[in-house]
Image (cartoon, helix red, strand yellow):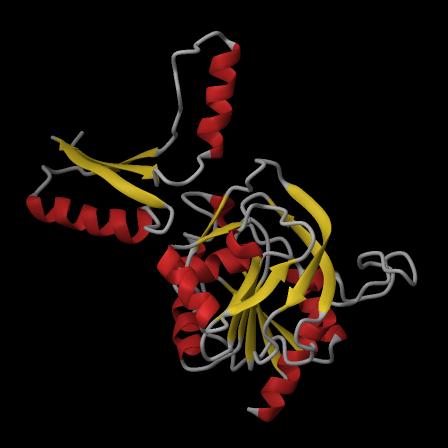
Length: 231
Length: 82
């Protein structure tokens, strides 16, 4: 099972994302921003970072990159695509997911282990979770405040398109505590927190069992491997 | 140099944290009559020939489709200088 991980100029977490793919049992394939060829991958991860220096708006220039032309077309055809942090911003700027992301309400860059509730487990990237499962994965962003028009919010709530909500702490002022979204089809998922940083004991968030033992992020990647098998 | 100037502002209903920070600093400096600061962007598109109506129409398209995100920003002005 081949999962592409895109590198834009300024991407930071592509190697962690590729490692997460491998730990879940998949084959990670590097995709390059300037190359429209998706190399026959079965899914794509848009990793975190600061693509194009966050110039103009976070994710806005990356959304115009040659590789995104192919990814947008493939996503509209059902290819599973996961956008993490900056990747979520790229999905929003590509109109694969609605709304926008603005500077955190308290104006600080935030880095913390974040509790989330899985609100939708019928997507390519969340089918290994239980519905309403509580998970903890790292969050690290400066512009993670999710906003959308009232009309869009009504649609997101009504159609069950909110994939993750922040629990206990809403770190960035996101409306309706939205941490991540899915599209109608369930192949496209985007979220601000970082599942790829919680995939290996010793390097994840603290848990009640042991320090840094949290691996809740791994299920994103095992989910998509299952989805690809069943597709 | 002929240029088209596109001005983009965060939507009025949104909190503009950068503007708020600057406003706080101005208040510390004693400029109490300033009630709010909002910070937007001025984007210049340069040309080496005179600007046509078609350029301006395209600039509006670029402005609304790429230079701004309609969910969070508005293009408040497009003008040209020849």
